[in-house]
Image 1 (cartoon, rainbow, N blue to C red):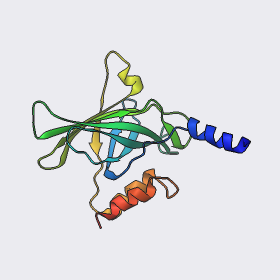
Image 2: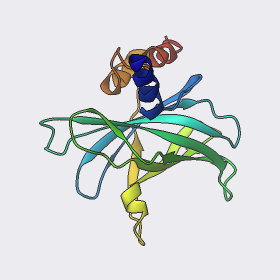
Image 3: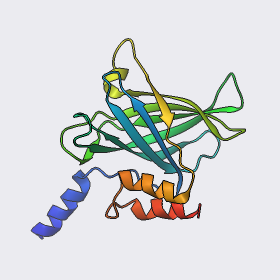
Image 4: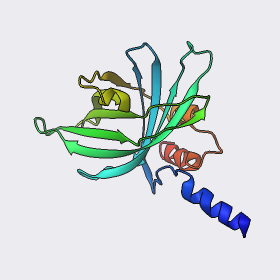
Length: 184
């Protein structure tokens, strides 16, 4: 009985990652923060259908010691889509991060990031993007970092990028590899 109660308590107190029902969006980006630290991130989310809100999972890879060691943080987010009010060809993705992140690789803490990404829907291309973490957003004068896409051309490139952020023991790994197989 004690073991059963321990398991139930563990399940209630363990933060779960967003449960993605069907991964249809996998994208990779990077940015350099004002302090010079280079970050790479991956977003996995469900398919966008019009102006909707979907769960997403973000993983961020970075190094604070010049690349000697790398860290990977993971956090849930909400992906919200809106049409640009000034240009109907532009769709804006607002990625609003959860309050806390979990360090998957390395040690320390991580403040989750929020992103604004602009896409041209007529030619399906990335236009521009911006990043600010919760600490930056709390300031009276927010400084956004510019975000750039990390492009890939083959399904093998896609798999290699996924493996930077996920290992075969991660719950989403199989779904991500199934997504990559669509491009074989």
